[in-house]
Image (cartoon, rainbow, N blue to C red; front, side):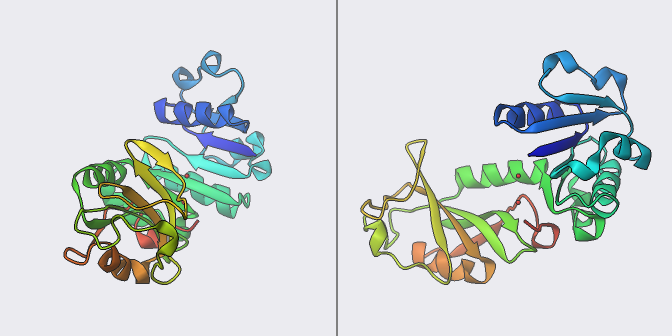
Length: 238
């Protein structure tokens, strides 16, 4: 997969290094000469240019890219880059970095953003996840807000605690996708059991979230939205 990353700062370089390690073809673009550090990641292509300019994107061959990531520290630039990549070059998937929470509402399909990633909101989600037991926490939304990635740390009072996984019927189309136990992530085993303290990750329709919360923790039954991207900001999720 060919991926262009606009913004070769610490965030952009970290993303690039991760993707290069997974075998993807990476192009980093930045208009600041000081950000062009090709020696730090020689496997990637580097381009000194302004990604907000059509001519720069044409030079970079954006129309051949599968994914465009706008990862600069400027929200205005990230919006412009996403819009140009999507509307002028038809990039199938765009990801926009949100630096300031007040700008989150702009990062949607109108601006050509398929996925928005808000670092402040992600940090909030991680904090909420760490301290909340018995509440369903919405971590991320997908496809125009119709589905979500949700998490619950299973309380000891849960009626499903100690129960066989394969015997459970989840509301709607909810799917248990992972269990984190003793700091290790494992795939759900139908013959395994759910234990108090397990962190359960589900993909579910948002309309089924409350019912899922009631099944897992009837006494609390809460749903907290600390999602990386709000429902109106995300269509298909990094």
